[in-house]
Image (cartoon, rainbow, N blue to C red; front, top):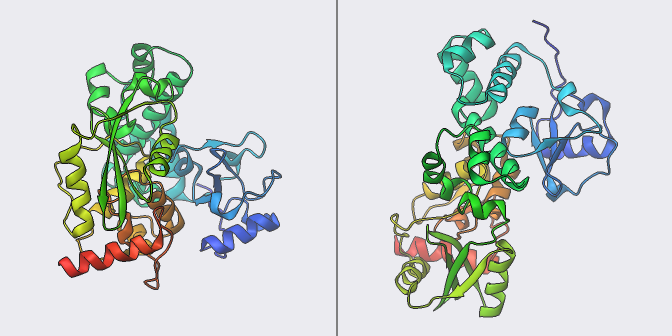
Length: 358
């Protein structure tokens, strides 16, 4: 099997972005560039306009970018310039088999035979390279097909069977965690989804909680009801909204109590959307004990993606249910406070309040 040795000079995102700006030919094949604003991944030498730094994510393999929901650039054909070595080739072969599967996920035995590895070795190598298991990669690909089918106008039944779901019940069981709403609502951009909302006045300002019948889909902190309602509408532009202070009163009280240093109740149901990578980060955030913080680098290492520090920061920023998923507990490598959707002063107060409570 042919191995191509790449120079080890693009080991951090700063160096990778510099190579992207300079269209550095030696970077071609060393990494993949994904642009959040377009949903496309490219080679670092792609002739397209250089995206802004905050809109860029870097991956080792095209398969990683696809698992995160990006699609290949038709201009620079990034799949043709992927790095080569025996381990990566084995993972790539497994990914191709998973992507070609129509109705059910290939077994580890089948993947191992295709990759030329034992099932155990294949599972371990796949996880170390991709950051997720083969089964999680299958789930991510299947969900992507489902979303495409729904957005193309297919009815739910056709879309789910076309994406490889064996039954509608299995899809709806996971709809809250994977789509953030029912498949029918997702296919219409959220149209038909009814989101109830209510406010609570706290020492840190107003808190808004938005919820569907499946669970809480939005938590925000702000200064005015109008501003917070605008934030909720921006996150779900096609939904229908209804004020429900009495129906959500107990839920809002539970959420607001976290501002006084109480751990959020784990039984509160969530109805949120996220990629496989984002869900990994959000689960890691929920595992941080109250009164403690973790750096973005520690979070990245904890989910097996030590180089994905900026991507972890992006996942924190896109957390739709602040407080319940405690993204305020993520800090910079030197312990400094970094961006927080609801303001750094609130982030500082939340951390100090939790430390005092503990």
